[in-house]
Length: 177
Image (cartoon, rainbow, N blue to C red):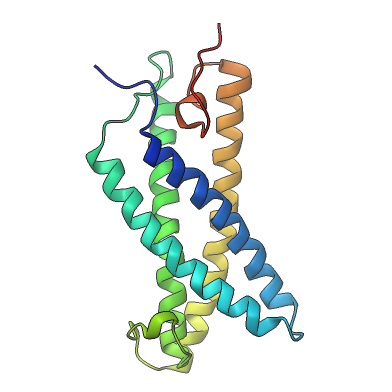
């Protein structure tokens, strides 16, 4: 029998990461637009949160692959099922790529890494420039993908009323009649 909701740990990680990712996007935008005395604090906060998000997304991937999760509604058209699966793959890929791009960017630029992590890219300023641009564009893509994800969740909750949003809701799971 398939579950009707995601396991509590998966729901907790989903919402914790949602808050952290949104915070990271705003911190990232603030970093590049604010070169005042707050810049070093924002950079350190961005690095630490990025590392935490990398660890959390790895845990989420393991949970997603190992725990049962609710199926999509039977009445959902196959094209929407395909879009849902593809969008989740894109989200997971971006959640994994963003901190790895940041880590590689710091490595290539010769900057200090959180927890004295090893370099994962050679010290090369041209590579740093490419990785910095890739990190920025991936951030925009992540933001757009999150907006699409949020839009789809709201359509499921407010239009279809099919329980998809309820299956990932962080609070108690009450059935609406």
